[in-house]
Image 1 (tube, rainbow, N blue to C red):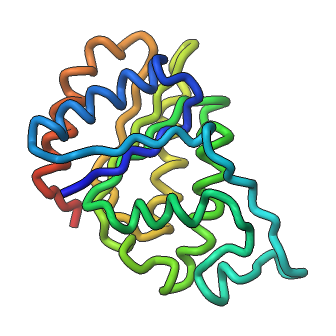
Image 2 (cartoon, helix red, strand yellow; image 1 turned 135 degrees about the horizontal axis):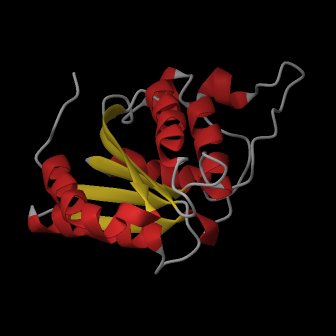
Length: 186
């Protein structure tokens, strides 16, 4: 069993990375190998809304016309048994790198070919806010909408604040163990 952890933070030692490390520790304790991917290190362009109607091959064929790192990352997600999406919170929403990835992912998932091996796949989301931390719940709602549109099995969305990160690390580790056990939201 393998997990892919997609992180929208550019800081591999920041709060979001610490939250990810706790989940990965839990996955590892349950015998699941994890691959961490930091989106800002990849080339993932924003959606071009190709055709006059704002769509393109994504809607017709379940793939994107842009040749960058998206297709390879989507293949990694398809091969994984479970997926973790983690993002720092900016303006009560996803980071720009996570937004670029999820915008294009949901477009290819509108077609059955794009949803292949994604539909029903268990995932959890982490939204880690700095500052006052009040935007974490709104970010979870945003991430949940996108993942539901892609037809993931959204088993948990976890808001984390700068102020409660230390207290949440043990429960994030448990969330990793739980995800490895094959939870289902249905």
